[in-house]
Image (tube, rainbow, N blue to C red; front, side):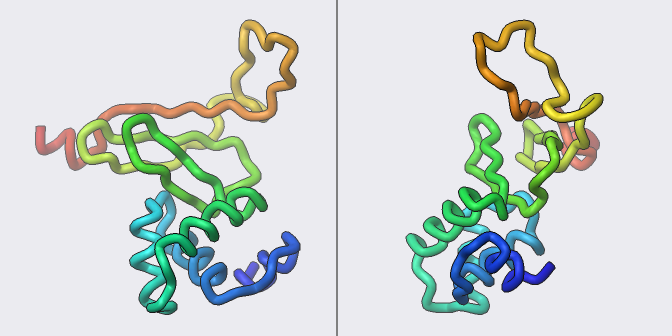
Length: 137
């Protein structure tokens, strides 16, 4: 689906910054806001930092992007939404990759107590060393 169509399908106005952000995150999964900003400025050179942050927030709120916040790291963004996948993060270099759902249907994990909440999503972050950092060690 094109960025134009995705924006329209989610009831959002089609603007150059929104298209550029969607395209950038599609090309650079798990990108930080700074990485997205640099990529967007290659096609929309005058875009402001605030505009990129506003667009990231709007697209995340609309369900077009997913924000990932690994502990101790900057937020990252991805276009893979609609499933309950998890992530693995390298403790050394910060590399991040997708890990499909551990077992079964969403939310993948069943808590021992919900305190009356309806559980919709379980976020699991695996931590370790990526192959390059493991080899360097």
